Image 1 (cartoon, one colour):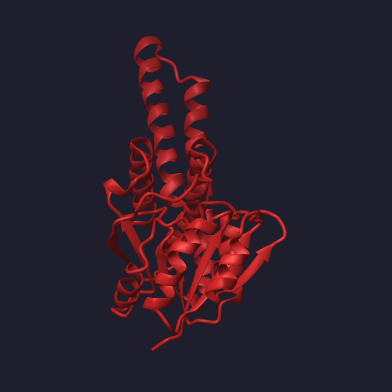
Image 2: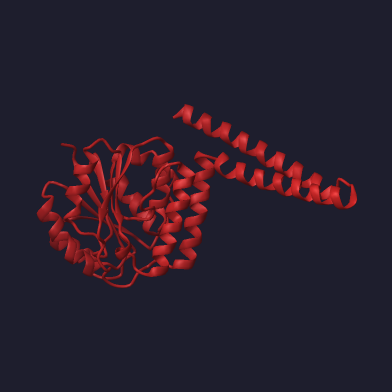
Amino acid sequence: MPTVSIVIPAKNEAKGLEQILPKIRALLRDAEIVVVSDGSMDDTAGVCSKHGVRLHRHPYSMGNGAAVKTGARIAQGEVLIFMDADGQHDPADLARLLAKLDEGYDMVVGARNSSSQASLSRSWANRLYNWLASWMVGQRVADLTSGLRAVRAAKFHEFLHLLPNGFSYPTTITMAFFRAGYAVGYLPIVAATRIGKSHIRPLRDGVRFFLIIFRIGVLYSPLKLFLPISAASFLLGMSYYSYTFIAFGRFTNMSALLFSTSILIFLMGLVAEQITMLMYQKR
């Protein structure tokens, strides 16, 4: 059996850690547990010491993604399990994640149902993220932002340089795995109500999620973005030309601008696609 490390990023989550650490220790006795304290000001260190888990401290808050990257670098296991410290994730699901991973997957993600969402607005936002990511990668993405996942460490390390320091690391790693051709599986889970106050800011982090989806899309499948924009510009130019030709019998500068813009965007997409192919070949 591969060795397992459980990485838990934590920022002022002493109450949640007090609840989940003894359960994890009881269920996975041989697993390494790494808690990364992201500038915590509470008793996170005392709780970790009490339960005998490995603690690494950030001198100040660097972000959830930065804590995940730190944990991935110092963990010794061949398989990494990432989970939140706020009590939302049931430690009993960890064994189910590992069993699913053994079926031949490179990463298994805990997919939350609609009742597990913190609010209706967040539920609809996650559905939109899932749909957009599914279109970008050409595969079904059941839960783009879930923080509970098991992954093979060697493959996770390939994408450390792409992961952001904020809360959107699950978005990046999920899309990167899909576009790299690694097998991603989903396991239905029920997430409990978190302990304490959420550190996520919906508006700010929501915009970041969208930017990251498009950034990763451009990095791995650029024509998915460039081709629709090019086609829209061409159709708009054709429509405007039809109108001006019927009404005035003229071909206007605006139509020429739209047609040339369409061609330029398409050519930029082709160049980006070639760069992507070279990146794949190098890997």
